[in-house]
Length: 343
Ligand code: ADP
Ligand code: MG
Image: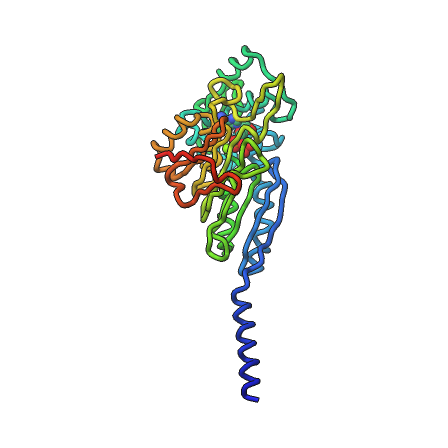
């Protein structure tokens, strides 16, 4: 009898142990915003925290889109583009200030006033066309982030200058959502904002880092590398993400502010990892414009920005910065590719 009780107790104990070790179930959901599908994965010890956060995430991105999107009629940005002057809310002013700061830090490789050129190429309405050289020259002349006057909540733009936060908005959203997730006591989550902006909150529930794939620009259905992230974001800008073809020529959506034409720097994609999703988004666009050499130099010159980079050239060469040591690995099928480490 005693023996039987012992066995029963042992079995109960084992059951309890198994219960303790069972990995928590993730809550996964999807929302459509900022022209893309976003996937969120949350691990909540407390169901209530997850229930609270879910509507905040979906609502958060669409609220941001309503104030920041250049193509959303009633947004702060669209209104400014129409009228040239006016007041904006505190959040728009904050994003604008940070974006302008990054435009300056990148020497204008990132330029939020590229919008008239983005429109002229037809990327906003997906009615693509190739502007004439004379038109491009006139457009390039008007691209100048320094012409944007921002004082408190008052903004003014010179005639013909229009803004677009498309290069940084998803990153901004990523930081905001990660903050909401953490504030609600969720310590493990992966927020995939689509088109290659992703934010990792904490590590996976088992304590290992999140493993996020980097898309092969030559085969966008595949990933050539994996980057391990823990409380870090990652963003990729690549010519393969949005482009059109005309007369055998490819034209993509990342423009060189100096020429108002697609940036042909020899790069096919740039991936940036940093604690700030905003920086990942903005810098991936900027470094794509700069090209490998200037981009690598920018990384050396700005340790205070705290970011790492993976560059892929149009010839398929892979370069990564030294700070990714131990966090970067080639994916299955790509093991023989050479990776040049930038110091
Ligand atoms: P995605 O929006 O596909 O994630 P990016 O973050 O690289 O890609 O942003 C590209 C978008 O930013 C373009 O669609 C365009 O609206 C705008 N843009 C293009 N070139 C520049 C540039 N040099 N500086 C700032 N914004 C740009
Ligand atoms: Mg970007």
